[in-house]
Image (cartoon, rainbow, N blue to C red; front, side, top):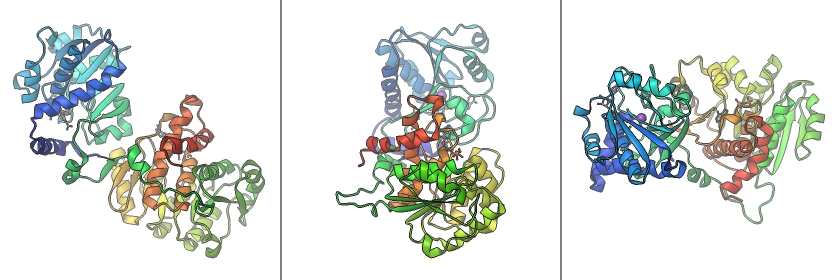
Length: 503
Ligand SMILES: NC(=O)C1=CN([C@@H]2O[C@H](COP(=O)(O)OP(=O)(O)OC[C@H]3O[C@@H](n4cnc5c(N)ncnc54)[C@H](O)[C@@H]3O)[C@@H](O)[C@H]2O)[C@@H](O)CC1
Ligand SMILES: Nc1ncnc2c1ncn2[C@@H]1O[C@H](COP(=O)(O)OP(=O)(O)O)[C@@H](O)[C@H]1O
Ligand SMILES: [K+]
């Protein structure tokens, strides 16, 4: 996992690393520039015209080092300098001195910015990094606005789009990047949906600061990576039987919303559950039996929605339960959920209408405990905790909720955030916009329920479920793009195991 630390701690982290390794800050900047160039070289051609805009801080220093390295590799580079270069940071100044004589470097005034022709294939933004401490103004603002108006140019931000603060929501303008290459870890604000339009595609470049150095600066926020997820998986042996893979129950569905339950149950099967049972109202029997022959179906007392109750002994036969998809929020369904929570204390995922009912009946929140995982999307979450002004507030409240109620809360979206009762927050790195389609949340419920049933800890079930769900979305959308539907994500789940090399 990559630690996400706040911008103010990065300088101290750098200083620690530099003194421990006995290297100079210039060397660290060189590593950052080299990491950027290694990626850049694979993607762009020597005949692309490249404009690199450099400020007077260390982000500008990165830009100047990148210019030198690309020039040496035969790229066609022009540097533009903006800001107070007479008082530039030491490493920015040094990198300016190291620029080859023949590499064109143009200092821009506000007047130039309006009139100069930016005839480039690629613009690299190294104006301001995480040291930004006020909204853009003057030359910086003029240049960013001008660059943002350019079309048919590939725009790349170094570390963070200039103008975005590293830990807060932006006020005013910022550079609009197609791609952001963030050094060592994604800066916190790059994960906010409000900034999606500025960040573009997010990539993280390793500049060699190893994870132990982050220890003392840890803020309990982490960016999930492939290898951290793979190692959380349980392995099953040659003689494993279906009981080892878990018996799960998926409850929900109502007249007209049986598909949600069907998708959650299919996702549990595709994630590897040994036995999947659906609990649905009577109207679901025919639909579920014919569309999903691998699952067993139980019907409750209600005709069109779940009603009455299921005794605790019957519920305790299952290793894990997922409840909510398609269940509706009527008084009858609410009573059903209340009785269910009274009778069942095992591993549990509550999603969709299950969460909407909790929002309407806050008394039920007393039933939450360390075995429970809630999976709201943003709207469901705000029904639960009240309106939030921005995503930062949402993330803070998600953590607060999780710590207060002792359960795991998964706030879904791009970079889904998993909040744990111990105060940690994990951010997902998989998934894409093509997953924003009806039913994909139900798929996640089925996957996490399946992992719980297979004996994963609640934390590991949440982490593996979220990460693999995103991976399945990526696989499913590869050839379908906007035509991706939730059932495609379900069908892609088995391939995520192949990618993770887990049998
Ligand atoms: N571990 C890391 O993350 C590393 C970071 N490096 C780079 O260093 C950057 C941070 O460098 P700095 O701390 O020098 O910060 P910046 O490069 O963001 O620049 C800060 C300077 O800009 C001024 N400034 C702030 N807001 C402004 C505004 N709105 N308009 C005009 N001027 C403004 C400040 O007064 C200060 O002089 C990172 O973003 C990254 O690019 C790398 O060089 C090496 C390693
Ligand atoms: N832009 C996106 N990038 C990554 N994942 C996304 C994006 N949009 C949606 N998702 C994922 O798709 C799922 C949507 O869930 P949800 O909103 O509950 O859908 P539904 O209610 O239709 O089942 C979530 O897991 C979410 O993280
Ligand atoms: K930048």
